[in-house]
Length: 450
Image 1 (cartoon, rainbow, N blue to C red):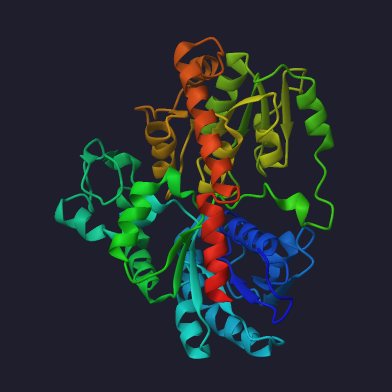
Image 2 (image 1 turned 90 degrees about the vertical axis):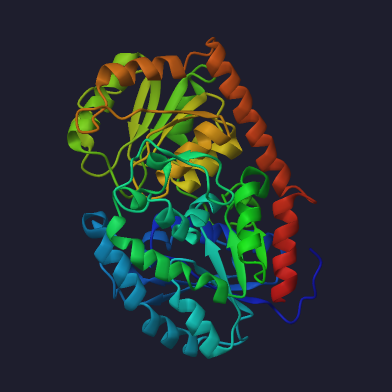
């Protein structure tokens, strides 16, 4: 977008301290930098999080600013997620405000904050700085929480029958209770009141941004626009790093050995397995998954988590590779990758969509169950791993059989699923092209804050 070199636009970014939130916030800053190169960014992090990402590629006009580690460590936060979440609501506001007072001019045009840090709205009001709320999960997830009163009225907010289907949530196609965000029916339920309080601040922001593609969630986004009719709402997704090479001036972490291994594999023959960076399955479930994957005979690339190495005593061979890290987006776009076993974090769902790769969904927590439903039922580009009766444990035999069918390129059902994945991929790509929905929305947001 053409713009005057002066005055510069100053954007302050305040992400929620979690990988699935920091990444889309950074990607949004990079998107704005592509559209308006004279923008300067101040990206606010805890000192711990700065240590995690300081060496990552970033635009030259983005600077990090840090606050003390006043919340529990990222390492092990899953052990008491409720305490961690509540600390982000009470402990970060004061140091962030002090930091803002010390910032060099120009005065920020806008503070983009993660929706799960609602105190930034109050901070913006005190500082007379407009605030944009970035919701980093699916629009369907937000619609569920915004219309919690309907769940209460219909008896689905407390110990619901998880096999019932819900068809009254605005913008959310018919959905089984078990596929609603887990706070509705299980993990995270103790935080419902906290989350409802958080989301009550959304209408008080000056803008609402979705890290989503309008065409992929049109019903939910339209419903939210109707509910929050006075609030400018922009879909700026997929907010994944497809554009990074154009503006990142520092080299990325190398995954050359992984790409070389993928280069040696047949086309669409490898399933990429990643269960996210936050929560993990139980040790007994992981044992079943490992045994099932090996038993399937399918080629795989598996990204393990810290502490999981003991489950992988077999040496790597020509058909499998186990690593501690990889560039997921790069891997998903490789010709050898024909499927993705995923926990269904929203960022992973969008990267699979952009790459046109079918997903074998194994959700664990919060919005992941809803994302799994979107992938399988709405986008029709995935298959869900059904939980077993024995404490939810899925056996190795079932996993092996499902994985073998999932990666069978001649299976008619799987062929249709792969066709659908390519259709979703095209929707994502078109949205980011000049004149596409996300491109237009980003430009509109930049004009509004300039």
